[in-house]
Amino acid sequence: FPYRKAIGELIWAMISCRPDISFPVVKLSQFSNNPAKIHYEAVKYLFRYVAGTRKLGMTYWRTTPADDLPDIAPPTPLAPPDDVRHDTSEFPTLTSSTMHGYVDADWGTDIRHRRSVTGITFMLGGAAIAWKTRVQPTVSLSSSEAEFLAASDAGRMALWLRSILKEIDVPQQHATLIFEDNRGARLMANASQPTKGSRHIDI
Image (tube, rainbow, N blue to C red; front, side):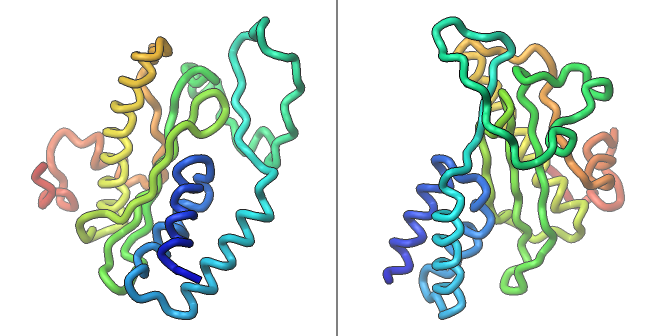
């Protein structure tokens, strides 16, 4: 089958409604010029996964019920609520109408170019409203630097989403929380001056 056409169809699904396939699609698209047998097999496996999970979806909810919408019970989530919701006592401003994001990055796992991959997801109303997976433009010297660059990308994406939400009359009253799991990246972001590990990052 035409490899490029298959990747294009997967990219369309990824952009429109399938954030869960972002990482493998980005990886497989890097071999569009000269795919090997293992890449064809991975593409076929990914199509089987999409076909097998087509009944799954993202569920959004409102803070207050709407009279003009039917009263339908939401579907049962696949994960327990404790696994997908944060403690509101720790984050009092985090509600279903508050946008928040998650960001992560690997560190040079691709032995061809050693560039890291960034993954970003922003949530609102109980499900994802924007997501992105991309190869970082530079080689990171540490996992903290890779996560720091990913967090920077997520911050720019948050500003863009906040401007859109303001235009459609859903303004965000509080700062947008972005959850990052790398302690070193958080320390670099909160440092008042360059550290030893970030001294080479000028801008």
